[in-house]
Image (tube, rainbow, N blue to C red; front, side, top):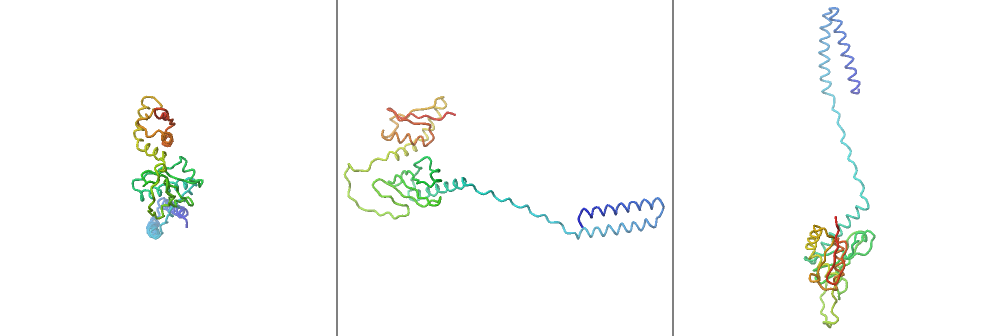
Length: 248
């Protein structure tokens, strides 16, 4: 029997008992009143034991909502972040003091399209660049590149060979891209301080004097590194580099 039906039946029984009690008082039928009291007492006892034996209804736990399926964009972001962490682990495990940056600004879009990727290295035992080997959006290995040496993967064993010295005129050329990267990295905090001073003065640019810069042939590469680090523009001039910054 449903709880609603039980409640309705109890209401009907109580109504009948109340009507009979009223008739007993009106007609002075005291023996019937005593019988009614005994019946009410018995019914109360039966109801008490019946309620104790009724099993409590168990509530079903709420169903857990299924997580939303991961989007392609979030999967690419996670895979790219994991690859960068693996590159850092590979580089620092081999050269603890080494640092690296992507050699292109749109490395993530290239990664998503499956295009070749490479990094620039600093303080990496003479290596200046490395090609990142990717398979199925997963990091595979690094192929280190240095002037005068063939490409070597991070899993190959390096063999030292004795070679004759080349003439001074044939010595390896200077890599101004790496020089620019190291200069900007070493002076980035000072450049940010100058940006804050320029903004406080209401101006939108400043000039890096030639005395503060390395070899003049590296200025163009330094301009590219400044653009990579968020500056609006950088132009080499006769007496230095003119830098434009963003105005809030």
